[in-house]
Length: 198
Image: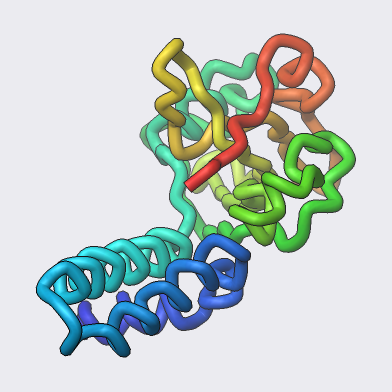
């Protein structure tokens, strides 16, 4: 069952593999297959590029995730939110996170260059939400967040997700208000999105 769900998740996001680089890998893998009977080198090329192509499709089809402990830390250290939600009384009602489609995000023009479009069909950003409730206060909250790939060191190793925007919609005792936890404008003053070239 786990393998079936894993393959289903990849299939649901197969559109993310429709970029120029993946199509090039598929074309060269097919060419290597046609040349298999010519020499050993073509067998090696076929094996290598088959694995490379399958790995890329697998990675592109992966479900986006976020560190839930980090998310909870943001909630409980916020002065307005920790009065309504505590580590002992909160519960998660719902969760959803999915990749954003397209490269038209106004915050990230880096992904609209021809080179970036060759390797990517989207900005590798995601949008998600948590819905929380508290059993003592009766408050509910929908926590919205947006993530981007981010390189935090000189080796261009990218953390999978940096949350660059986060806000909460709170409902308590008939009152509704919005609390901004992380503002995109503030985050993007000091951090730039990491453009994937593979």
